[in-house]
Image 1: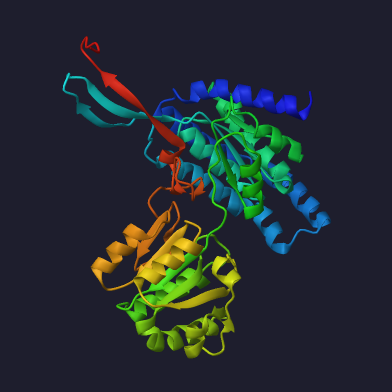
Image 2: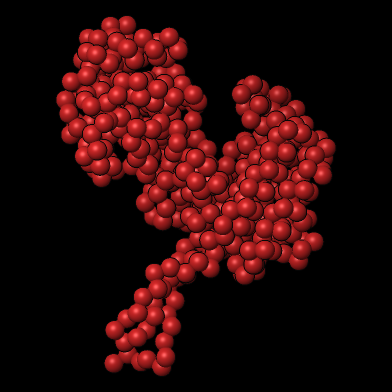
Length: 418
């Protein structure tokens, strides 16, 4: 069969399998995940052997040391993947939850029940742990899942999937509910994005170029976030010790992630007192500062900022800095240049904090806390499938509940409509 024919068959079989996974009990799903975790650890040597093929291929292709590190699986990392599956098994099952039951004037009882989405397609880059993580989350939420990983990790991904589907087959759960595309040609992605009759949702995980490619070519709804241009606003009433700790953590702890700080906004009333302090601290941590004229008045070693800096997701130790006249100016800047990802305010004024939360149009808004908390695990989701900066159907870090939807349920006693 051609690649297109294979993709269509995989998608149709996943659709049929999703009817089975949707009916699985919580006990059966949790048992499946726990068996999968044990099976992964039991075949650690086999996974490492297949991963070695990817590493060798990556070295021949000249992949960077950082990319090779992301690819590499050893005994410790495989144990961590297994532990993640056990954590998902321990999470509450959202499927079947009934909410909002209310009685209508005609005595009908109307509510909503949470149900699986159906078939989820996930397109991701070179992290083989995503194969197990994404499969676990989708299956726990009662869905089928089709995975298309990066070509760099094809042997690792197929090895992990083979172990997981073997467990499913042993439990009489259709293995087609967890498919990894066995080829790396881009044609496979393009064909996958055409299967709107079988696939309900596409989630791309990776860099901005991958996400834009998927969004531009998909006939299926796409959950996406292009980049994380995250802001911290140091208000006029900010506690400087808190502000410094938050800014340093948000920028320096892991600068290469999407919830890292990229632009610092400082109220003009505290600029003279706070800027020399924070600039000295950040420069001591090897952060390159790019500031507007008002910021550079108090931090003359900073590089002049350009219009491009306000749009930038640096993902490295570079920080754009701006002095703003007031709260209005801070919110206007965020709503103009932000990416709907994560913003924080440092303030001692409750009313100003509440206004910031109401008026900033991003998926995660924090008061007196680091932007690094915009993460499913940190927000209590247990695990996340990704982050959405679109508002349909999910906004922000996505956990199990976001891999479901709701349907109306109605209880009557013979009522008919007049």
